[in-house]
Length: 86
Image (cartoon, rainbow, N blue to C red; front, side):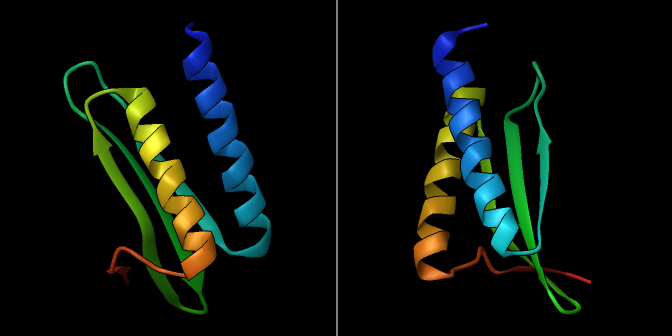
């Protein structure tokens, strides 16, 4: 396995776990050889679930890097990707 990939995934999960300690977060990902990779992170406040991160990229490493950037922005700004779940 590529060192850059392993390092990126490790840094992503370190950030995710740190934010998960402070917020009620749920992580979902899907990677396939035949489709773009997807990472979604949902935050639940009370009975409301909001998607705070949704990334879709051809390369797995690009998906993790982009998701990491969104999580860093979310941790500073408290934003969301405006998707709700019931």
